[in-house]
Image (cartoon, rainbow, N blue to C red):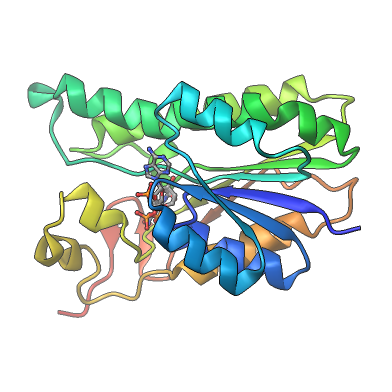
Length: 243
Ligand code: NAP
């Protein structure tokens, strides 16, 4: 029987690449995000199902989960960073949006799909943390705090699934060239390009391959967490650049 995987944030970057790889591995993939036009194209290509969801809206997540009767894998990937504002200038709205996207978005989708994941008899949740979940950096306040929270809730879920048929994993990428930096810098492509200048970042496929590998381990194997950085990035903000 074909098993169902749900990938949030599948309209771009890591989520899109993960949906493609999971489909190649034989999963029926439900792809979710706000940009339905992109999702529909992807779903057609991979034989999956496109569903619009805004993870910052509880009613939207409830509708999304209600439309998914069965699922064995959830990749809670929707998220991102906004700005690089210092603590001295911390902007409430920016912080709250990052918490809504990364933390509450993950909480809501996990809560909504957990009954189906448990009922599958071999469920899996993969959350997207970040090097920012491990190493705070100047200007990273809101994103660091949100991804540290994702790490904490992932750990709590793993503890609470003790004795239950749901595995829980976290993938923590370093620099991956996607739409991430364009979103962080509010559409400023030039500023986004500078993040990857003179170095070789990871690609979305690099991370998708790891998620697909985690998802294809046997049922008794739980990959708890994986930190993946480019060779050129040795720490959150220590990057080798040939300029
Ligand atoms: P991306 O290309 O910007 O993709 C982000 C995805 O999240 C998009 O599909 C976007 O779709 C979706 N999304 C954003 N807000 C959403 C909302 N309110 N509701 C539903 N979906 C939403 O960035 P990415 O690099 O692939 O990021 C994927 C995940 O990896 C994020 O959690 C990010 O924090 C994490 N990560 C990225 C990096 C990196 O360097 N790129 C490093 C570490 C961790 P819509 O706009 O269509 O809704």
